[in-house]
Length: 154
Image (tube, rainbow, N blue to C red):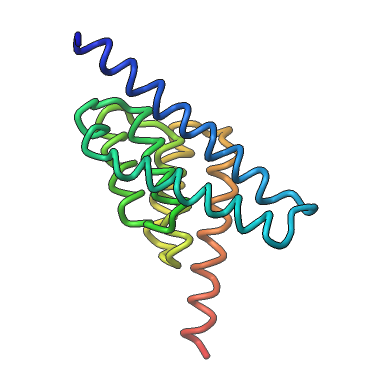
């Protein structure tokens, strides 16, 4: 199979998986979901995420920005924050964007590392000053730093 066709097929495959993941996340967050139905959806979401992660070796061969962004999202949603950051850093090597930096900021915030998070939020806002997600993530990082300052003063 021709290399460009292979890359295109991989991109479509992982893009489709990402759409499914976001759809499942949406379903999980609907208030009417409860009980065993929610457990089934959570199980499907987890297996979809694991499928994306299992194909990491194929993804790394593509050297495609969007693919690394999607891999990072799969890791992030699976709670594998260090691997998510690594995937987004690979994306940045290919194309530096506010989205990738904002995603890294969010991961560091989830880990409680406000200073590292703030660096990436500031970089995201330097690239794209009107990026609302980066601005909100920056506030999150600042809250973490404030909390850490208050707890160290106690």
